[in-house]
Image 1 (cartoon, rainbow, N blue to C red):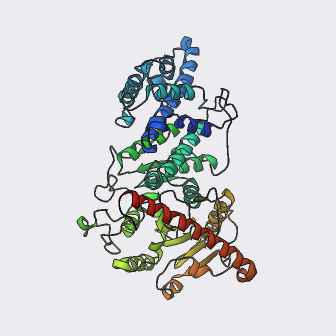
Image 2 (cartoon, one colour; image 1 turned 45 degrees about the vertical axis):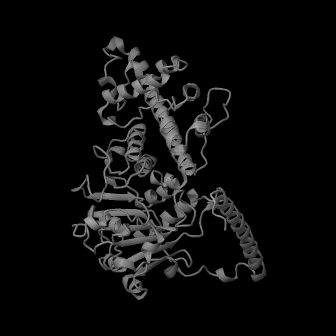
Image 3 (cartoon, rainbow, N blue to C red; image 1 turned 30 degrees about the vertical axis):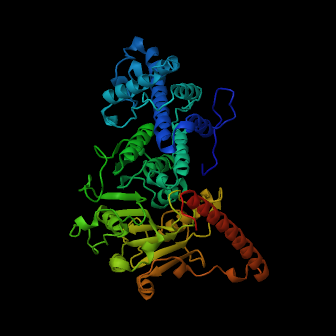
Length: 521
């Protein structure tokens, strides 16, 4: 994970394994006959089942000790009052573990999921219930149950659920990597979510994500509140997700964290069927699909949300921006991810919409991100931050100004194709924003050549309403002379040589594949 935290908590011979790595090893047991999209639900469902059973068992043992005081270990209210899910006997992990080697184990797991949904209405239709299907190897399932049984998913000393939550997040990340482009449908890189949360600082109010994926924005918001000694009950969560399987992941993710959230009674498209139509949110955090062309724009030309211009039917970027604005409370703040093209495109009226939003003085901050952060796309991305009221008494009056931050050079490669922002870099970006806004204790803001600049609307007008940070922040002092010309040319030509070599390899592979299909070039 981004912060490098690992917890050695396995009780078996693999005691040096971290929780996350041990659970990923568990998933590997099913890889031979399942692709990532399938085994994701098998493994995450079992982890969820183990966790709620562990939490239930811990409470059960406590109630047994209190029976002489009137406690009833078999009454659901004794658990629900402590925000712990009631787990009927046939769904408890001890029962499944004892029967793991039975040929009917798949059906027993399915029955357990059905029983939990029956007793906990908030999970109705959420849990996976296809463990008895013919395509699932029962021996592999038994081995998976055995392995998960030997991993402690809860810190018994502190009662913390972070171990499991971190493991769940780690799994989502690994599945996103394994699934490639499709993985981006449910997972936003942790460092991107953390940057949004650290900048918006959602301490109190309504937090909304209309394309919530697996719910990572909500999880990070909850962790932010707790890390800063706030009260998690001071935030309320609203979300929506159009993909049914992803909506189920989000419901499970929130349940694991003990977060009460309104994700709607079912999955639904936020444009065509807004489940929170009257919501005015204090904070909006989102990572909508980049440059989506199939969003129903042709059906929604006269929608009340398009106050700043009708979005083009072929690209949903500015439909999302205006959806966010529509749902912002009078002092609300929004932070979201978009493709870089949103900052400069003039196609199909996008430039006019962006101009109108800028002239309405809604754009608070723009952050250019480094490349290779996302699993789903190599398209360069940026962060937009909108403020309904730049005269909000909590902050410095920044009417008529926008902060630009160029973070393109930050981050480090964890492998050839994926990059991460470090905690220190996220703190630098967020700290700059808070200083600019005048947050208490954030220090004094100053423009830093090459990194940040506060620009007026007049300056933005002079740049034809383009919001690309690089256009405003300029170059670092001495940036052009940092690397001697000969060294730079050697480095760049070496990189170009590697790229030519990779290009030749890919060309040869494509030619071979085409030849195999009978289409020789």
